[in-house]
Length: 95
Picture 1 (tube, rainbow, N blue to C red):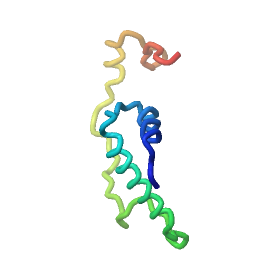
Picture 2 (cartoon, one colour; picture 1 turned 45 degrees about the vertical axis):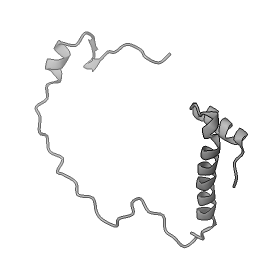
Picture 3 (cartoon, rainbow, N blue to C red; picture 1 turned 135 degrees about the vertical axis):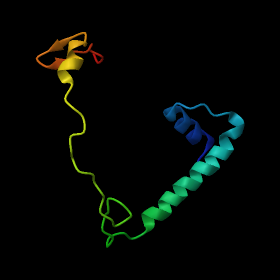
């Protein structure tokens, strides 16, 4: 797949990045190469391949779920600016 200058400029606009005009051909070549690779990968028959969560077939080692610190919630809430019903009150950040 070959990208045109307008395609690269549109992609740059959507990504909110500035590209110098003299570098557009290089970006077009590199992006076209990436899209060609994606096309090649899409053409591979993966019907019999089982999806996997991780490429290594290993069990994850987990630590024991033990309490290692004492509960200091009351201490921290005493020095907090605002607390209500055991919860920290914070300013609204999303309208």
